[in-house]
Image (cartoon, helix red, strand yellow):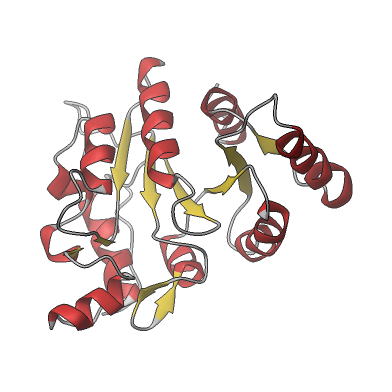
Amino acid sequence: MTEASFTPATRPDFVVLVAGTGTEVGKTWVTSRLITELRTQHISVQARKPAQSFAAEDPTTDADQLAQASGEDPRTVCPEHRCYLVAMAPPMAADALGRSPIFVADLAAEVANSWNPTLPAGSPAQIGFVESAGGPWSPIAHDGDGIDLARSLLPDAIILVADAGLGTINAVRPAVAALEEVASVLVVLNRFDPANDLHQRNRVWLQQHYGIDTSTSVALLGTQLLAQLALN
């Protein structure tokens, strides 16, 4: 399949990729709450998860949580053929289940073709969020990782979710450097506790030593995103 071609009539005004510095940093939690926050401001939003893998005992999937926030069908957020019932990176899960190989171009094309009008007049959503899997270099397909997916999606902005605690500086710096080659990056320190000395020092160190500004709450992240997209 060739590289995805976007349909101007349905592609959201802005596409925002949500990446993480690794697994379990809270990408879905941040994205879901950001979507809820934006919808309270009457901003139309859609969410997509190109591929997801999960354990059979998981009560809800990432797509379930994103769909609940955006008001969409989970099968629209992530199509059933991209759901893998093994807690591994999607291409590994596909192999373990004997499923067909996954290709970055196919994932990007499926996202591009899934955007649908959100208003009666057929207008596109204002923001479409696409949540990746794992970290920037985690395999998302047999032929590429999260960085390759980012390049194929042509996002207008990228949100990088990082943990606020120990090790975050080491994780944030290379991720920001790689993702900034694709689009401008907003960093959010998830689970940030203003009373935690390490969290505060990590935030200040990133800004003072590397010029990386961070959000420390979903509300602040939403304000920064809308300013960047010129939607406020």
